[in-house]
Amino acid sequence: MKARLAGVDATRGVALLGMMAVHSLYESDAQGHPTWSFAVFGGRAAATFAVLAGVGIAFMTGRRRVRAADGMPTVAALAARALAVLAIGLALGYTDASLGAVILPYYAVMFLLSIPVVFLPTWAVAVTGAAVAVGVPVLSHFALARLPEATLLNPTLGYLLHHPVDLLSELSITGEYPALPWMAYLCAGICLGRLTLSRVKVAVWLLAGGTALAVVSATVSWLLLNHYGGLTQILATIPQSTLTGPETQEMLNLGGDGTVPTVTWWWLAVDAPHTSTTPDLLGTIGAAVALLGLMLLAGHVTVKRPRRIIAAVQKPLAAAGGMTLTLYTAHIMFLNSDYDIYSAGTGYVLQVVAVLLIGLGWRATAGRGPLEALVATLSSRARRWAETGWRPPRLRRAPAGEGV
Image (tube, rainbow, N blue to C red; front, side):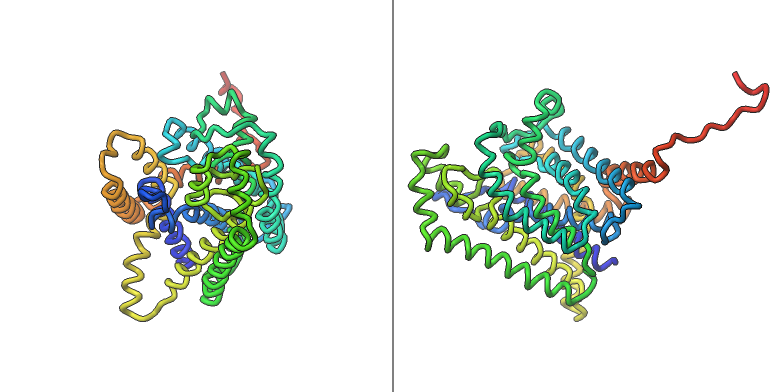
């Protein structure tokens, strides 16, 4: 159990550092090409977070299909978790989305959508995830023109109260991290979490299978765009597109804001970050699975010197990964504060050092992160209330002469 959790937490720690890199460092160079940090982490860091959220749901539900008898407590726990994460996300609504789009409100919708999924057997979860990855981008392509245009701002409580339908549309389909296509990540994570992750054989299969899926997805996208004329068709439709020529090239190089233009179906062949196309979803799932397999496999190294090096790297990553909700929130707040006075590189290095040291110190003293503890407490209480039938505490009858 400890080895499995350490590998999962270390993977989550890498995803945290990757998302911080996407937010803090430059996306492109002077020629418009992706920087090394964006080429590595762009799209993949957020996807890994989402996959690991699915793994967390699997752990929360006992790593097995939820039985009907446990239905109400599970529903209550997941709903409470969703509401708590939504509240934290809305509290960050004051921040500038151009510095970092807050993913938490999207997570809240994903947690709610995951409720029926946890009642399915593992094979059905896998089929559902595959159907989402293939079908939802196509359905979204039909629906985008008929839905309200996304604001791409970090949502606030006021916006939720005044524009609930528009916000639901953005969180589900049109926004930066659209919950409906991103359910492919949570389905993949739930399937992963139900595996025996402590086994070496499983870690090897995850590393090999994830790598193969990422490579195949990128290869298919490249063939469709460059060999079968997809790129030519995309460029030919620029006059009818909502994007200019430079904006089109930027999306092809750096990715989008959760969706792609609907002017041609060939856009669905793109695998650029945050485009929510099938190649993007499958490729980033593959990268997340491979990273998880690598981290789990590293935990099984027994040779003394490499083991010490691995432990020295994994321990702070796992400590930070065990409190990513708290550290992610602090990172978003720092980027929008007067304390962020550093250059991109210096600011990122300082944040990395800070989150690793805070993670180590907090785990050694307090254990669970403060926001993690809050969400877990609310979820546990909701589960207990559901298990007792939502009955209020029984009042003690006062003896004669004791009443008011």
